[in-house]
Length: 246
Length: 337
Image (cartoon, rainbow over all chains, first blue to last red):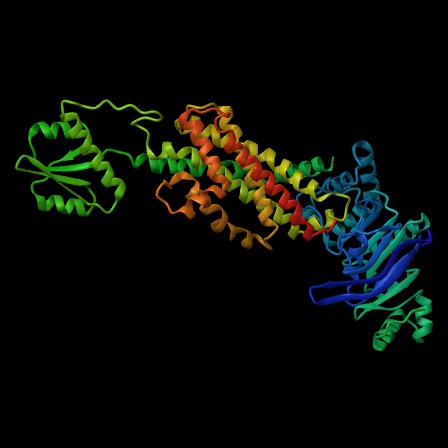
């Protein structure tokens, strides 16, 4: 495995009881790229992400992150994770939420506080730090979740539908931030079913029917399918129903 | 110290939740007060009607019971029926004939006790009665108070700990913190310490109220009772968080109460199990509450030291550890590593 591949998934299969969610998944993610996972709801995007984060063990095959087989607690501290639903403590303030998660990564004292304020500024919540989360709007919670994912300066960022419920202006700011992080060498995996977001990704993996039906840059996918949009390409590959790779 | 981070966070969260704090601190005290009011008032003097009796007999009876004198047996029977009297006495052939209502065993035994005392004081050879522990004045509440105190600590800690841990899972934050380098045992121990601090305060409040407020008999040391109560509370705290791992919502958690909590009080020594079937005795040995009740009674009523009840205390510590370990294993459901 070359150093370039930050994440390597081999022959991955995940099943719950008799129900197979994903099968025969092979995927390499290079350092500093933004990989978009595209697929309808229930296609298994979150399942794949949970295996990368180390919350689940694959039924078959293996997941390597930074050349370490997952699940591994040592590697988990190098991953920033933003879950699909906001997992925040409603009865704590925004700052306390960040500080709590920071402490789980071993950050403490002045250093932790400074970093917490830094990430709050990053998501434009610097004036809401002392507010309780139960008074936050949906978009504010999403922003705070992102701030928490970034607090320990992870090498890998895994974002499960980060822009759901967020207005277009803020979404643009999110993407600017993602692109800034990519320049710093952070690898980002992002799930979405917003097609125009998909255009921003370096590569896209289309997940459907329990497998990756296509993978490549947005332009490659469009050319190969003869469609003018990613959405068109997605529908084209979905019809074929077979796993293709470019 | 991730354990302390979790403990600190719990304390911060709970401090903002005034109602839960009120429930933790006030509810056990309130229930204990109600029980003491009911059980203490139950041991009053009986109401006895005398239809015909020698004057000397009536005088002696008056010192032990509230005596009334109805005109005839018919009125007495009516009074007995509407429970305004507990028994009536008719003398025939120089022997008292006593009629009781009889459906309430506690009143029956109260009347019988009174009449026994009466006949004892009439004999010349009055036996001198000594008590190894306790006294003639010890009422039902006094002998049960140590168990009840222990039980309410056990019950309220179970409730609060169970619901709090459940909330962490339902809100998705458990999943989220398991996506950090946090180890499973660190979560379990963090919860244990965070709630432990509140549980300790709760225990001290209830104990001070029971001993100084309700004046339950207490011949042992305050410190020894506190140690037993805290160990008992630890077991309950660990049990609450463990069982909440098997409940999908609050409703399912509460279903554990009749199965796991209620039998504990029934088998903990509040009822005499001497003549109970063997399975009931074995069952009582399984419940942690039994060891707590035994130790509390020994110290509070019989004045034993912590060293005398070390076996019970060790059992309680063992249970707490067992539940903590099982809880760590139960969390494997959420993350394998």
